[in-house]
Length: 224
Image 1 (tube, rainbow, N blue to C red):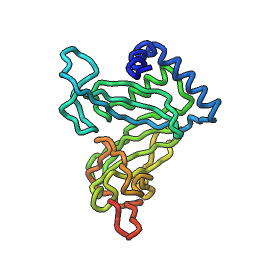
Image 2: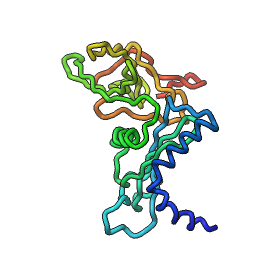
Image 3: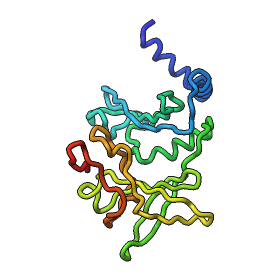
Image 4: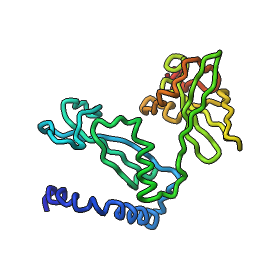
């Protein structure tokens, strides 16, 4: 059987997509003991060497991870378990901005096929430093918020992609952010890894000199 024959069958499978992934999720759990407390979300893209499509569709020009800005592409979002078992995917227009995808994708997945994992909740904290208003966007898990931020020290006196601070949520919905507990992301401990960057709303314009600021390599050189 030629690969093209299989590819042509994919359109017929599309209408069974939700049922297929529901079945796979059960099989991952039965055969491999897969757990769903932590899920990983990632984006990729694939490009097409073709004439520019005249009709509206998903193939669009956008940011190319493959350095092929001359080609149209589609963006693919994927959710997998830490063991690498796929649970859901979506194909989006090639000009979709990465930072706009997560909330809508999670919404689709929970409506289509609820995954037994606690759903993150986004929130915004507003406060003042030296009379200047600052904002942070956080993700809520249970009774805790995680705020990922950069500040005026990032890139030269602290890790360039930012740090994170965790804070409990009280019964009134208020939070108290103590930057003395700012910590490094796990990816900041290796030059081989790329850390995510915080949202534009979480890039503080003031220096935060408290908390952990950077790791050092085996030669004692700061990894900024």
